[in-house]
Image (cartoon, rainbow, N blue to C red; front, side, top):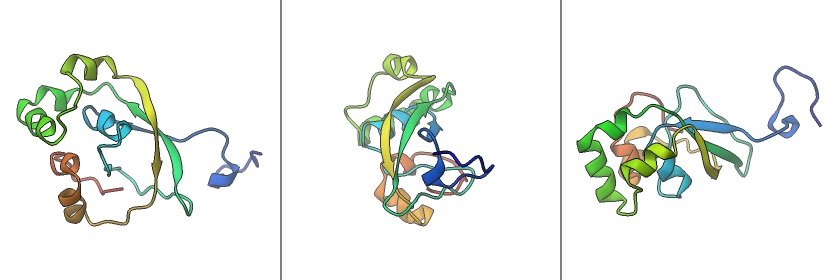
Length: 125
């Protein structure tokens, strides 16, 4: 039950949290191919993790970058076509189980080809 407090704990929350990601990273995360995400602020999950919906935003800058998409398709041969990735924009793509990673960006990039191809200074989550 919602407690009415302005900063409800995870146990008090009604509904499902959602993260917005850009393509092709949103599709990779929803398909279980992507292991990490970069967030602009720290995200904490309860012990044991939390189910979180993956929303695909409308930004298509990565889709326009032929070199990035070639590297993504090399790492993920099952990556949907550009038209399918665009059709998934502004949609919920799935639900993933997220846990606190507490992983350094360099180590995470070695473990995740998608993160290694995502040029961003945001912290890894």
